[in-house]
Amino acid sequence: MRSIIICGDSPDRILTETVINTCSNYGGAQIIDNDKIYIKSKKPHFMIIVINKLKELFLPESIVIFGNNFKKTKDSIPPDDSICITDTANHEALTFISGSRIVTIGCSMSEHDTLGISGYNDDENALVSLKRSIVTEKSIIEPHDFTVHIKKNIPVYPILSASAVLLLSGIDTKNGYIIG
Image (tube, rainbow, N blue to C red; front, top):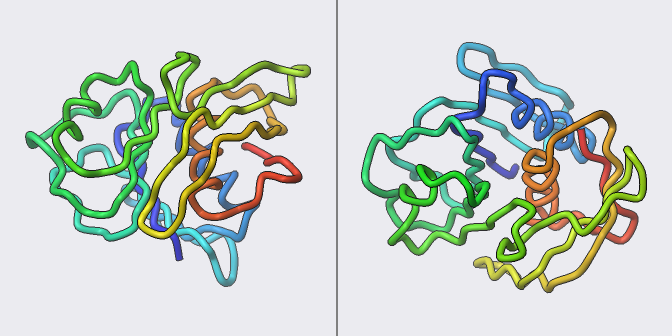
């Protein structure tokens, strides 16, 4: 089961709902969301933990997604084999993970980010670009483009975060992804 931690989502919870719905479409999810615990599959492939603050992280091979309301409570995350996903405009998250050995995937429309949207075919389909290799403990994911079908109006960062989770979980991009 792949562990995903969403930390510091905004009150509208678009990031959380996008990741939960996307993971539910690709193997199901067990969700621990503040004071709620529920499951969206008999044998889920993902465990999603939604929290507001993160002091320390000792959950090997987890994916940490930083929302734009993330507030650091400690100077840095201890080095481990987790992977962090953040909007590169999120200076609080970048400061929190700086100096660690954690792989960080920047997601936004900036040309300097690892994952970005190259363009939209229409309101429901986008072309996502992995602009540089992602080196993890177990694999190397090479740069390439893939399509995503967006179920509803979702902002760029949640689309890219959900896409990054699927990429990191080894889900093939050949047929594109359904996000949301």
